[in-house]
Amino acid sequence: MIRARVRALLAEVAAGTSSIDDALSRLDSEPIETLAHTTIDHHRALRSGYPEVVYGSGKTVEQVIEICASISERSAHFLVTRTTAEQRDALVSRFAAAIASDIARTVRWSASGRPDVDSRGDRPRGRVLIVTAGTSDLAVAEEASETLAALGIGADRLVDVGVAGIHRLLAKTEALQQAAAVIVVAGMDGALPSVVGGLVRVPVIAVPTSVGYGASFGGLAALLTMLNSCAAGVVVCNIDNGFGAAMAAARAIGA
Image (cartoon, rainbow, N blue to C red; front, side):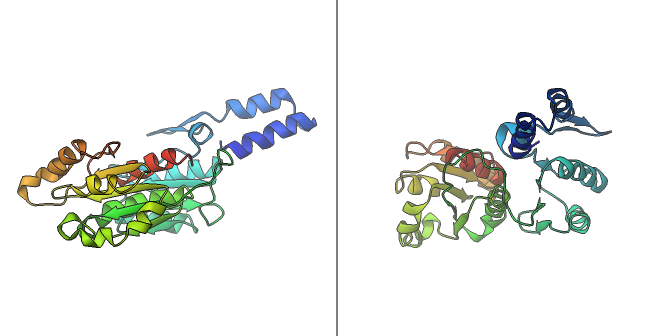
């Protein structure tokens, strides 16, 4: 249940077109729904502003479709992350307005056909800047971008501006300073977030990726570098977790 529906229900009670008991009954039916394989938290949108996000990995096509169908009946939006090609094809076929990204491995849907989610207030939303160290980091960056799009938050990109050619980043200082928050995605040595953290005054959310040769240990080296950043205030997400970074950025800017 999204906040707009609760407001509408309360307005009906206030106007006398709906009884208190009827309103309570409708609210009682909303919190959770138990399927054969999943328990869906339908009040997630009311509490946090967006419905429960579906993690596609490990689920069958049928399970993902059933979960998304249930969410779509009570919410105007859904997002599925870490999908397979088969899941993406099935979701796009089932939901006409669904938008799939093969790079990000996501599918997002809005009943209105656009990312116009229920606002939690009148606070203005700024644009988030997503910065990647290398082209090989784009999959994680696109997961963050698609998540922000699902939330109705604008995002810009600076791609392939890693520290090995730091002049590429410094040439974009104005874009960095205009962002409401910055997500920095980097593998290999993972040094880019420290540089960005020293150039801006807004939240910097670092995402280590599993990109790199053997001694990168699947992103662990980048993770440790970011955790030990000398730029005060840089926060770090899990390896390859573009989704988590986008959700953190949304909370940071009050969206």
